[in-house]
Structure formats: C-alpha cells, structure tokens
Length: 372
Ligand SMILES: Nc1nc2cc3nc(NCCc4ccc(CCO)cc4)[nH]c3cc2c(=O)[nH]1
Ligand SMILES: [Zn+2]
Image (tube, rainbow, N blue to C red; front, top):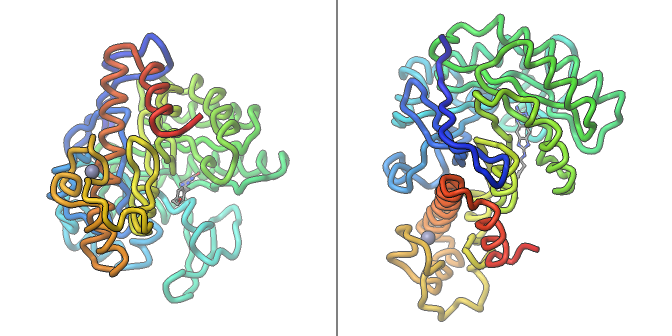
C-alpha cells in the first residue's frame, strides 16, 4: 500500500495533458499543480494561512538546507516538518541531489555519496542515498525524492551514461533505506542529460523499481527550451499513466503550460518568489519590472485581471515605493502576487483540460504574455 494515490480524472483530447488528483496522508492536491518553494521550511514572506488563501495545494522544502540548518533532529523533535512550520497540507522534500551541486561548495562525488562544504559555515558535509533518505524520514514529508546526480549541462555522453547507471544504483539504495513507504511516497528521478537513449535507459531502469511516482530531473539546468521539450517528449510516454510525473525546477509560465501539454503533473520553481524579491512581477501581459520609474505614478493594480490581495488593495505606485525603500511589505506583496499568478495559471490549465481546449488556451496565453 503506497502513501499516495494518483487519480487520473481526464485526458485532454487536444494534447498529452491530464487532469488528476494526488491523495496524500495530508490531503489531496489537484494536478497539473505548481508547488511553491519553501526551501528552509518557509515560503519566503508568506505565512501558512496566506498560502492557503492563494490555494497552494502542496509546497516543497529542501533536505540539503534543513540538514545544514536547523538539522533534521530538531525538526523531528517538533513532530516533523508539518508541525514545525504549521503547514497541515502536503509537503514534498527534494533530496539534495541538486542543491549540493548548485549551492554547496561541492568537493567530490563517489559511489558511496557526495562530499561537500556547507554554504553556511564551510564545514565538511557528506550526503549519500542512505543519509538523504534518513533525513527525509525524520522530516516526514508526504513525498520524498531519491538521491540522484543532477548532471550539469552540457555533459559528454560517456559521463552521462556512467552517471545514469550510478543514479539507478543509488535509487535501489534509497528504496532499501526508506523506513516509511506506507506514509511517505518515494519518487524516482529520471536522468540522462540531453541524450534520448540515456533518458530511455534511465526511465526503464527506474520503472523496474516500481516507484509510486516519477520525477524528470537534469532539466532546467540552462539547456534551450527546445531541448527540454524534446527530452520530455521522449521520456514522459515511457512513464506509467497511473502515477504522477514531476518536472523538477520548472518553471516560468511558458514552461508550465508546455510541460502540462506534454503530460507533466507537478512543477516547482523558485522563479515567482525569487524574481518577486527582485521587484519583478508576472502579469497576463508579460513580466513587469515594478521598480521601474515608469510605474512611479501608476495608480492601477499590478494586474487588473488578478484576484490576489496585492492587486485588490494596492497600486503599482505604492508597491514600487515599497520595493525602492526596501520595505518588507514590498517583497511580501510581489511574492504574494507572483505565486497567485502561477497558481491561477495552473487552475486555468486544469479548466482547459476539462474542456479539451488546452492548445487554444496556450495560444491565447502566449499571445497576451508576449511569447512567440
Ligand atoms: N534532486 C533533484 N533536484 C533537482 C532540482 C532542480 N531544479 C532545477 N532547476 C531550477 C533552475 C532555476 C533556478 C532559479 C530560478 C529563478 C531565477 O530565474 C529559476 C530556475 N533543475 C533541477 C533538477 C533536479 C534534479 O535533477 N534532481
Ligand atoms: Zn495579483
């Protein structure tokens, strides 16, 4: 009996998209879903109640960060991540397979695991399939990720092949180390760089291990959009129709829509929170740099079509002032809006799947947003 159950509600007649629902020990969330990123047990600037008010169904946290600070034992003593951060809905934790390389001052990768230096205090750290799973068992997220190597871009065929085979061996070690498969669903992560035959090899090897869900990793690492889409088109059809597919680290509005069209059910990305803190907001007419002098006297909302707290109560002029003055409310409002924008985008994608008009929705959205 797995910790989660995926319900396939409807397949879109125009595309490979699916409308679904993932049931977890902390309730269900609808798919295709965008997961706000709460790296250090908080979605920066948003309280749990505020996240519920914008209808966030599931949030993501990071093993790498929480292991370094405050440490998984402190979170376990609090009763786990849900209690520690007072979020009683689904949580997914990434395994550290990406953060070690992108954040830590990474030292060495061997069969046993990865040695690196903490980005906080430079102390020497080690993560392995066993320790990454043990940490996630203590954190208690509903969905946990296998410990993998997120292969940098670009990479040689031979290196990618060796890495894929090690990631598969690591996946087997993760399954063996996992203590609570009935309450925490462990997802495998398909790698393979930008090589179709290695994507297929990775997928087949992980399919044999019968995970309750599959992530597609090693993308959104600087490759051109076309390459990402090609890797999705060759990988997604190999994955079971009755299990969730999660595209890691994606992404911007166009990637979310194009990913859903290609059969992806779950997405996560720091983009809305990261650019929000830099004073850039997403609107149905494209990105807006609200700190720009252009908006100094603009008394209209960020996005007239948006129903969020920021757009209902404040103007571009005021929010620009807050950002320029480095007032905390400024980045709270831009974050609040950007998250609601992406959560509404996924709600519109789900509606479009229901009515078999996702391609029409995509064309209309891309035209308004300013994509080609
Ligand atoms: N375990 C694991 N985790 C991953 C996380 C990822 N996250 C990404 N991309 C995120 C890239 C990304 C980073 C920052 C911003 C905001 C600034 O524009 C947007 C995208 N790719 C990823 C790949 C993997 C992966 O293979 N394995
Ligand atoms: Zn808004």
